[in-house]
Amino acid sequence: MLSIYICSAILGISILILVLRNIKIQPRETSKPVWDISLILLAFFLLAYILTALKIFNRIIVKDYIIAVKDMLQILFLFIVIMLVFYILIGFLGKRYTLRVDKFNIGGINILFDKSSEIYIKTVGTFVSSKRSLFDFEEKRDNIYEVLNAYYEAYNFIRSNLELLDPKENQGLYKISCEILRKLNHFLTKHQNDYRRWYDRVISNDTVTDTATKKSITVHETTIEDVQKNYYRYAELLNDINDINKYMSKKEIKNIFRINFFDWEGKEHA
Image (cartoon, rainbow, N blue to C red):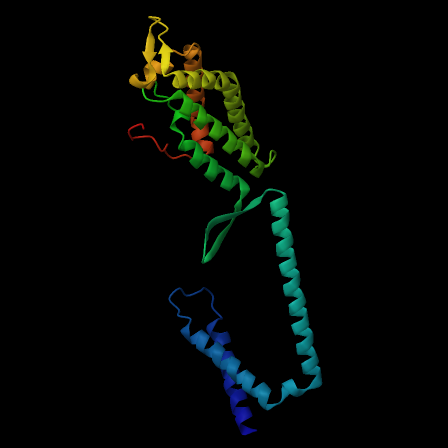
């Protein structure tokens, strides 16, 4: 019993020191927490020793209390888990968050939780900025057939990712995305079918008629610029491409998709 009294005395002194050390008018920035941590650990182990020596935990009322607290903690933990799962599901259904498998390998997968609008901006912004012909068409180098492919890919990519946005919550981003889709759709509907039919026929025949001289030109011996400028709606097509370039090069597009720089800026155009 003497050891219990000694431990109780040490415990009381430790608690008293802790109380006195923490009664301060202003917190001292230079104080170190080592002593406080040591005293807290000492008080904890001394209290455990005293409670064990007094056989507190062997008493029925204490056991019942511990069991009740344990059951309540389990119920509380289960409730927190259910609420967390429910909140995540609500986020998914409301398109506030998106589950994305970033990498997959034998070691496992990386699962990223992020706001759907953030993922939309990152993915669409990166994809769009890589399509140079959306912003800058080079008449002497760019093949219009491939430009049409790029525009079609951009249209499909934006449209397939548009479901990540909430039209009300992401109103500005949704509106400008729909405007891009409208412009690309109008352009493709107007030009894609006609140009592809003409170009496929020209490539198949390996010959094209010069609209100025009316002479036949061998396609594989001619630059792409000289071939495609003989398309019967070339001036109209070129004008509409320039309109797309002007629209996509607006600061609003660059800012809303957080494009710090275009992938093709400062480089030689391929």
